[in-house]
Length: 299
Image 1 (cartoon, rainbow, N blue to C red):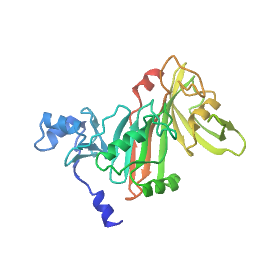
Image 2: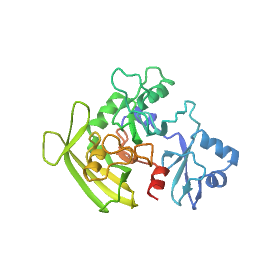
Image 3: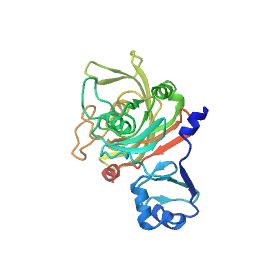
Image 4: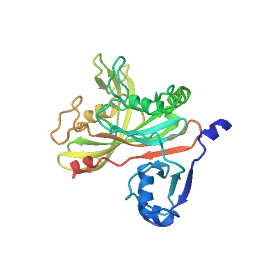
C-alpha cells in the first residue's frame, strides 16, 4: 500500500479488549482509567467510542468478552447531525451511513430534492469546499439501512467495477404480507422496466437483467412474516418484485403490493453489509439493529 494512504488511515484511537461481559457504560467507567460517568457519556455523545469498528452511542450496548472497544483521540468537530442519515463509519476514502426511510439516495437530474448524497456533500464540504461524495449504490426512498459512499472518484469506480468481488455479504430484512409457506427459498427471474420505471419479472430471458434473491423466514404470524433476504444480484426493486412474485409483497409497498394499515412505511431494511476495503483490503463488517417496528408487527 502507498505510504501516503497508510498515513491517511492510520489509527487515531486506542484499543481496549473487553475482559468480561458487561454494558458499554460499565466498561468505560470501570475498565478505562480516569473515566467518570460524566466523561463516559460525553465520549459517547461526541461519537468517540467504537465497538468492533462501528461508532456506538448507546450506553447500554451489551459487550461480550473478547470484543474490541476503541476510543478516538478526539471527537469529530464536524459531526453529522441529521434525522435521515446516521454516520456509521468514516475514513479518508469511504463513508458508511444508515439511511432512514423517506429520503432518496440521490435526487433525479435537475431536482433540488434533499437526498442522502446532498446531506453528505454538505457534511464533507465543511472541511473542504471542493469535496463531495460519490454514489456507489442506492436504496429506494422507502427503504432504510446501510449504504457506502466514496470520497474520491477513483475509489467509487474501483468499488463499482469490482462490486461482486468486493461485497461479500449483503442482506435485508422485510416484513411481508401473509404467512410464509416455506422456511427458505430462492427466487430467480429476468427483470426489465418500462418508461414509467415499473419493473416487470419474467421466468424466461426476455432481454432483461437476471436476478437472484434468497429468502429465509425468521418469524411468521397469520397476517405477516419477518423475512431475511440475501441478494446475489442488485437489480432495481429486486426484492420488492420478487416478493410480490411469490405472493408475499413487502408490507407497505404501494408500487408492487398494497397500501398498509399496519405500517406507514415500506417495511424493508438493509441491515448487513460486508465488503473488502478498496485501499486496505480489510474485510469491513457492518450491521444495524432490525427496526423495532418490524418485530412488533410480526408479534
